[in-house]
Amino acid sequence: MAKNKKVRKIILTVAFIIFSASVVIATAVNEFSGSQNAAELAEVHLNGWLVIPAALCFIVMICLEYAKYALMIIKTARKDAFSRKEIWRLSFKTVMLGRYYDKITPAAVGGQPAQILTLRKTGKIQNGMATAIPIFSMISGQVTFLMIAIPCFLFSGIGNHYPVLLATAWIGLLFYAFWPVMVVGTMFFPKPTAKFINLIVRLFAKIKLVKNRDEAIEKVEAEVRDYAKNVKMILTKPVLSGGVLLMSLFSNILVSFIPFFVLKAFGGDIDFGECFLLSICVEAAVYFAPTPGNSGVAEGTFYVVFSRLSTGYVFWAMMLWRLFSYYIYIIVGPLIYLHQQIKKRRVRK
Image (tube, rainbow, N blue to C red; front, side, top):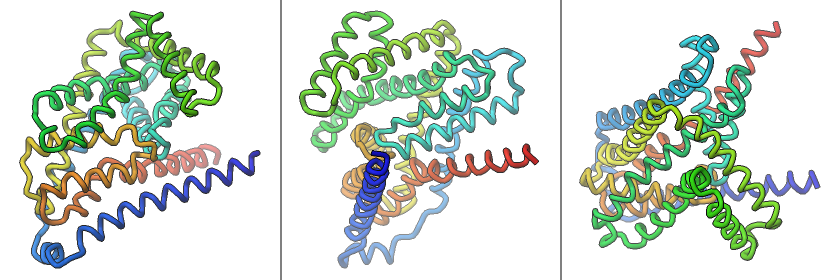
């Protein structure tokens, strides 16, 4: 059985790599084949200074994520548990490892467990709070994204030009809303929420997405109850919960600014407001993609949407966007583990 699992894992990994590479190659061929695109390749010049605001948006966004974790650790841990330097180091490691596991696991299911384990390993944060901090960070990000996306989808009129993209984005919002709705429902309406979870799992069981129905229902209900209990710990501190929500809101906004600057840097002709709306749509549309880090799906969606509006290096703009949204975390994650191993060896010596 162990051998079969290993073989299956290798096959799935190879299939994922081939799928992602195929999408990137297809977009590159489509971008640079033909006389018109060949002319664009020769004529368009990179506006390098526009990469700077894109990088700044990314840096500020990451700093806000560090600040969220640092604030939650300060407010929930013992006052003498960590020095200021230790808090920022722990926040950096927790955020980056969480993002790394989000990017390498299907549907981003590995981030929160990795963060919970990182916080628990310190031995200075209670297990319940070590669970509450990453879960509340995740839920605050999802809630604030919904606060941005729903008004954009309802009142912008973007569906008149991109009906398929908007329909897919609405489906993505349902996935975004799932855990926040379940957690809030469990806190205030436990019985109706349990019935709803039961209904969803039964539906998945009928379409063969869930094997053991009763076991799955019990597991999901237990997880939601645990999440709700831990989130209540944070919500009892209004200044803390409000600060985290505010930082999550600005973090989501900054992420949606990046595509505009990278498209402009590579010669794209696009309006800021329209680009912001499309960025929100793309982010929602690829959320439920089952590939690690939405790879393949995210690249393809970005190219299909923005190639209609932009001229120039749309392919390279897409790659730069994925550098900020995906590849940086894939690079930094292993570097953190390498640093940890070096540190452990030094301690042993």
